[in-house]
Amino acid sequence: AQSILTLVIVATAAFLTSHVVVSRIPASTSSDTVTTVRALILLGFGVVGLLTAAQVMWSGFRTRRPNLYNEHLARYDLLTGLPNRQTFSDRVTRYPREDGRTIGVALIDINRFAAVNESLGHDSGDQMLIDMGRRLDSNLGPHDLVAHLGGDVFGVLLASCTDPHDVGTRLAALRKTIEEPLVLAGLPLQVEVLIGYALSLIHISEPTRLLGIPYAVFC
Image (spheres, rainbow, N blue to C red):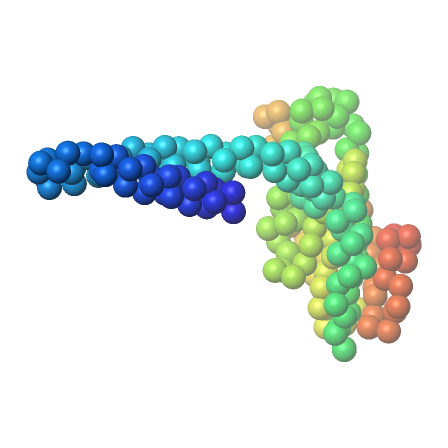
């Protein structure tokens, strides 16, 4: 809005200036010369207007950028780029429930993650979390959600499953995929995870309770 206002002001100034200048040109001056002078004035003001508008837009972007970055940090994990615990909790709470559908909320814990940090270093541990997050995210449906809840724990929301058995089936398939070996620091590493999940049926009125009862069922 500010950049548009700037362009309007500059355009008005250009018109008035060209009118004043042209009115002072001797009457004997050819029409081609008058047209050229008017065009040069308008061109000069046009360049100034565009540069001023660009500066206004850039200033506004620089002002908003820190706020956008802070909002992103509040909702996403900096290491993995996945939604964080707060975002995951909000999504579980607000996810719309449909008749006849089951929602599964799973927590996935990487076994012996501390040993990886100690033996291969924290850089390898961080890379393990990044790779695990990518595996989880690439093997979920468009309405599902994976989040990094902190440490070596990931959260998974399985939305719109047909029944409780479907949740277990999908988690078993997910486990098979994410437990494929990783290569860290040039060494193959067998991955093992512990998965616990709870179910939220359509009639449950407080879905946030699911986050408080992890590992209700193991697979």
